[in-house]
Length: 254
Image (tube, rainbow, N blue to C red):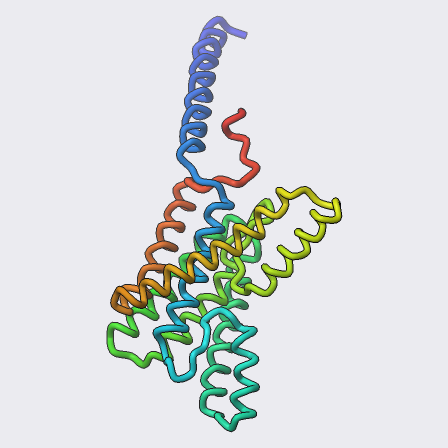
């Protein structure tokens, strides 16, 4: 090997080492600024609870349906038919179908792959934004309600949960999970810390619903509906800029 080649190698090695050190410092810096993936999951669950409350309280009070709580809606479809109220039954059925289609689309877009989270959440934000535009432009409230239902169907598959954190819009499943965990803790089959995730998920949905109810009371409806769009948009930006880290990220330890 020539002396010139050796000298070039000796010069490049410190430079490469310095570059790697700077890259490591930058990753550690971003890790300190970033938020855990589980926290983002709780935010999205809060959004689901918020939208459910706004849709139930402020849109089409004559039928009182939920944009995301499909168990209650399916029951109401049947009871409305039994009471001879076919119009209400058909309207709720339309929203349920919108939720179903939204859930299918959300799964097709995301498929449980973290790299697709920004795209799927951007789609949710877009549908929520469209529901706001429809309302502001004087469109029928039912179209807004259907759009909200579709968005809530999508959000169930919009974020790849980690460490048992996930986005779900149905409280019955959360309660069953929490109850099962409590039973396991009492029986000594589980640690009490295992209650934290299902309890935090449930409380996030309820807190979002409470916030949504307050917004309906104290703010214009268009503002109430546009708020979750803004929140999800911020989450998308955070994902794209690397400000959301997985729960098992060990960047600070490298």
